[in-house]
Image 1 (cartoon, rainbow, N blue to C red):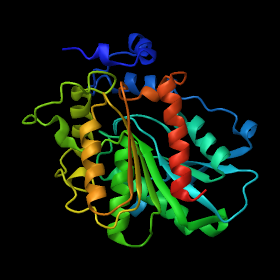
Image 2: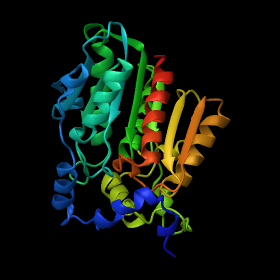
Image 3: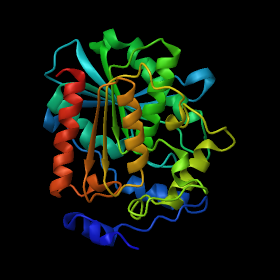
Amino acid sequence: MSTRHLVDPELQPFLDVFPNLVLSHEALPGIRELMASMAVLGDPSEHGVSRREISVPGLNGAPDVRCLVYENSEATGPRPAFFHIHGGGYIGGTVEGSDQRNTQVAAQLGVTVVSVEYRLAPEHPYPAPLDDCAAALAWLFDNAADLKIDPTRIAVGGDSAGGGLAAALVQRTHAEGKYAIAFQHLVYPMLDDRTTAPDVTPDPLTGEFVWTADANKFGWASYLADATPAAPAVPARTTSVEGLPPTWIGVGGLDLFLDEDIAYARRLTAAGIATELQIYPAAYHGFVFVQDAAVSQRFERDYLGSLGRGLGV
C-alpha cells in the first residue's frame, strides 16, 4: 500500500523530482555528488554573521577535522553555542548543506555555531565519525574563553544521521564526565538500527519516501561494519538515559524514524528529563527541503524557538 495519499499536498511535488535512492558501494560516489550539489554556501555577512573554516586535531592521531564556525557580528560574550552535526545517513552529506540554517541560527539567536565535517562510512566506520565529532566538541569547550562562549550553555544537535551522532555524542560525553552539555536538539534523528531488522514488523505508514528501509539498512551496515550494535554507536540501545540534558526532537509523521524517535522521547521523559517531541503531520523524511510548504515553515519556527529556549536566549 502506498502512503502517497497521506502526504501533505504541498510536499507531494518534491517526490516527483527526488530520485529513488538505491544505495550500494558502487552508487555512493553519485549519491554523494547529488548531496553535494544540493549544498550551496551563501553570504552570511548579509545576515550580520561571519563564517570561517578551522581545522581541529583529530583524536589519537586521526586526521584533522574540518569545521565551519559562524559568529554573530553584534553578539556580545559570553554567548551560548550550538554544535551542529550534518545528516546524510552516515554515508554522505557535508557541512555546506547546513549553511543556510546555521547562518540563521547565528543571526537570529546570537549564538556561535560550530558545524563539523566528520569522516564518512563505509570508508570510515564507527567510531571514526563519532571520534571526529568528539574532537571538535572538545575543541569548542577548551577554547570557549577565546571564542567568548559560555561553556555552561552549549547545545549539541543534528539532522537525521547527524541527529543520531548528536545523541551518541551526548551519551558519550555524559559518560566521560569531562564536559556538560546544556541541551540536545535532534531533527528526525537516526537512533536505532533495529527499526529495519529482519525480525521486526515494519510500520506500514512510515519510510516509503526519501529515506527508505533499504537505505536505512545500508546506512547502518556501513556505519557499524564489524562493530557490535550497542550504545553509543546506536543511541537507542543505551541501557540508561539518566542524566542526559533537556531535549527537543522533531520528526515527520511519515518518517521512517517516527517510532524510534517517539520511543527515545518516552525514555527521556520517563527518566525525568525535560523533553519536547514535535511530530509534523503528513511529512516524510527530509520534508524541510520543501521550504515554501507551511509545515516546513512551522518546523523552522519551532527549530529556532526550541533551540533558543534550550540555550536561554
